[in-house]
Amino acid sequence: MPIALLAVSFILLSPAVAGGDDKPAQPQWFKGNTHTHTYWSDGNAAPEHVIDWYVNNDYDFLVLSDHNILSQGEKWYPIGRDDWRPLRPEHVEDLERRFGPDWVQTRTTDDGTKEMRLKTLPELRAKFERAGEFIMIQGEEITDQFDRDPIHVNAINLQELIEPQGGDSVRETIQRNIDAVIEQSRRFDRPMLAHLNHPNFGHALTPADVAAIKGERFFEVYNGHHSVRNHGDDDTPSMDQMWDIALTLRLTEYDLGLLYGFATDDAHNHHGQGRTSQPGRGWVWVKADKLTPNAIVSALRAGDFYASTGVTLKDFGSSDRTLWLEIQPQDGVTYTTEFIGTRWRDGAISAVGEVLATSSELRPQYEMTGDELYVRARVTSSREHPNPFAEGDMETAWVQPVLGPARGNITAQEPGH
Ligand SMILES: [Zn+2]
Ligand SMILES: [Zn+2]
Image (cartoon, rainbow, N blue to C red):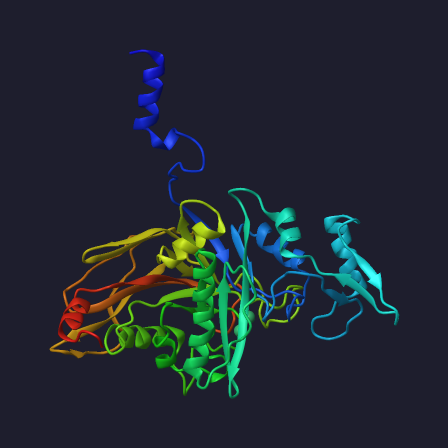
């Protein structure tokens, strides 16, 4: 065969080596946090200080999600501020030492106030992004309220700022903010994502409020801020219970499909002091073809991720009637995997969020019996979280739910519900 023809057939037969951006890549796992604050709103550190922590702690992507603002335009922050998010002269010196004297820009205003200019996302990207190793994804915590109930929605991979949309009820306020993200995603033809934050913060949201979100399907099953009541209290279900109630409502009465869980830091305290909300408490591992904002968000949208506060999985997956996962073991640690779901029996829901099976193996697997509406898995480590949001915070992984065989029965019986 002539050399030229050989080369052609080689390319035709092997798209993987044809080169360029189109080559299909092996999916890889990428670790990221989608919820962190800086001086751009009420975080207590410069964005470069914050990003540097995530880079040095082996994260692959980070979303700065400041309240109702993007890291865009000119913003000056007063030096010598003396509140809970101060910028002191020693902080400025520290930034100069770490990032070079030319990096930090300061000025003195007419009234004698010294200020430092906050770095914008393009500047931060140029400083920190490395192809295949670390990227920033633009984001915002849309920070709204109804009455006195805080309603916070993280919008990820945004192109433009979204102002809080308001509404005449808790649910309408949630939905109008989510709809604004969906509208922007369509307008820019770019994958974006909205996750509903910390439902128990201020006891703001009920499980039914979380269940009712339309056109989107993400919430925070774990938020690292100390005042968000991930474990619930006397009047309020835990985030795990809320997830099961919401899933059950969505798959029966509401006919809205699955709901996926994020773990996030919601970090505000970046200087070591204060236990309020520090980086490194909760994150997601995403299985994506490559490390770009669009690829990461598309993989999240597809449910190709799990939430973690310390348990790492080698992989997880599901087939027709099986949900399995494989734990990456760590020395001296044991793991309990609970497969959790709601059964549909004799035309009605049995217990909501039952533990269907428990395993202490490193490759646990659940075979569906036929009456499950959905099944999800939670892996709890025997090790306490080294930097807990509250007492009793154990290292955990949450695998996203999959639909069970009984879901088809309901749809067939009660279309349109
Ligand atoms: Zn919030
Ligand atoms: Zn926040």
